[in-house]
Image 1 (tube, rainbow, N blue to C red):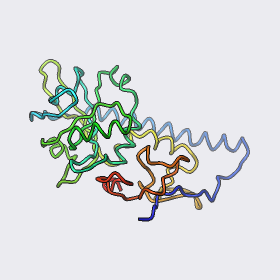
Image 2: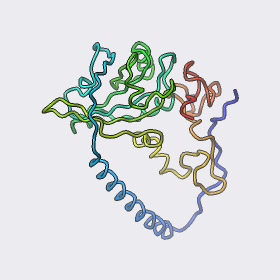
Image 3: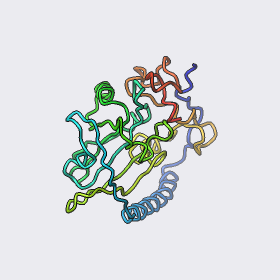
Length: 259
């Protein structure tokens, strides 16, 4: 298959203006950025006021430390962030899009300081997760839900197909009851992707088809440019040997479920 994820070539430039004109345009944008941030603050406040649903099912996960329950995944804290990483039982490599998400995760100490634990959960058996984790050089806790209904119950596996999702849980320390408080998926996961946030700051943006950009701005197929971090060529561009819509089970190219 021909690689369609090559980096687009820039053919246009932003207009050149005086410093005074640039400052005026930047001030206008800043006012909109502040309004956007305040709207985000209001949305977060509404999210914190969502009701919750109790989780009574006993789930068992395979971990490097043996079998653990959902309560155990809190690691003694009251809040738990679960990233449903797309890695099917018959795959040999994890989803490349989910891999980029994990590359963007910050050091857990900052979340731990706010009484939050974070864990990755996938359906693939633990040995596959451990091997891929070692390949990627990650340290994030990663457990297997293989043989349980956890993925299906939380929408991360639908009709045998893997889906990336984020689930937030709360544990009541007084009663040890566990609750689901929030879920998001698809573009909602972008909250974890600092790569996208930085690309949204640079002139050419994400360089994906469908973006609102001036004429002549470089653009390529949406979601097709990224690779696992060890699959880029030495110059940082997508390696010619990989495919844009490859087979996640073989570990080549992009995960078909992300595109």
